[in-house]
Length: 212
Ligand SMILES: *[C@@H]1O[C@H](CO)[C@@H](O)[C@H](O)[C@H]1NC(C)=O
Ligand SMILES: *[C@@H]1O[C@H](CO)[C@@H](O)[C@H](O)[C@H]1NC(C)=O
Ligand SMILES: *[C@@H]1O[C@H](CO)[C@@H](O)[C@H](O)[C@H]1NC(C)=O
Ligand SMILES: *[C@@H]1O[C@H](CO)[C@@H](O)[C@H](O)[C@H]1NC(C)=O
Ligand SMILES: *[C@@H]1O[C@H](CO)[C@@H](O)[C@H](O)[C@H]1NC(C)=O
Ligand SMILES: [Cu+2]
Image: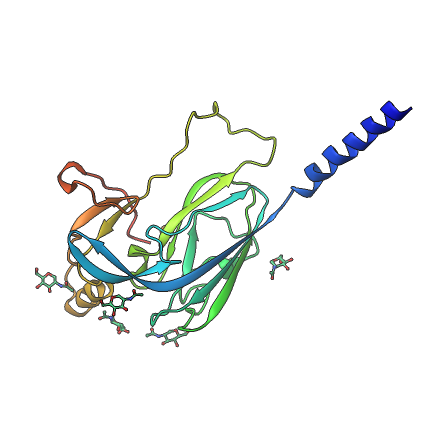
């Protein structure tokens, strides 16, 4: 009798958390701040999320609700686009400035609230106004639902690699100059891998999308 009761207790304990982990709410605080950064032997102030370049990685599972509270502490208008996230009935959380929302002005904050439905894998989030995406970007990792596997064998190791570019000049000055002159913007001074310029002569990457 005692033995039987113990088993029942165990079942209750194990079943309940499984039900509760369905559709979690993932909370993130994104503070847009100026951060002094040194690369290629020169220091400049860049616009970052929480002082990080690249920015923080968002982790969630399919069907999770993601809440990102963005607080703008810089002098620029800001928005962030969750590139590749299907915004089903949450168009106002998509992020393109002047398309789905007014820019988040200095001193203001905005809640990006969306649910990840029918998709998994690694996506990229980035600022979607002027050229702030040069330093405001990062990864979104959407894991399958608990107990569901990827349609391929479990990798031994997973590593996020973000390819980007670095300008010694202020990127806002670069795009402003291009807009005024009508000429192509100055090319970057280096490519970066996870924010590192490394031995630049060995790095010949292309691919970080700089068009949308
Ligand atoms: C960044 O550097 C400037 C110039 O050296 C300095 O005045 C400023 O306080 C620094 N900002 C931060 C956030 O460290
Ligand atoms: C910032 O965004 C507001 C709307 O949210 C807009 O009225 C204003 O012109 C923008 N400022 C700049 C410098 O683009
Ligand atoms: C996020 O959106 C969902 C669905 O509309 C809503 O139920 C929830 O209350 C929202 N969360 C916040 C913190 O506003
Ligand atoms: C770029 O242009 C915008 C809009 O005219 C302006 O608000 C901003 O101060 C300029 N930034 C730089 C670094 O020139
Ligand atoms: C772009 O490059 C030209 C030529 O090297 C330079 O004179 C100019 O100052 C650069 N512009 C910016 C915004 O750095
Ligand atoms: Cu994009």
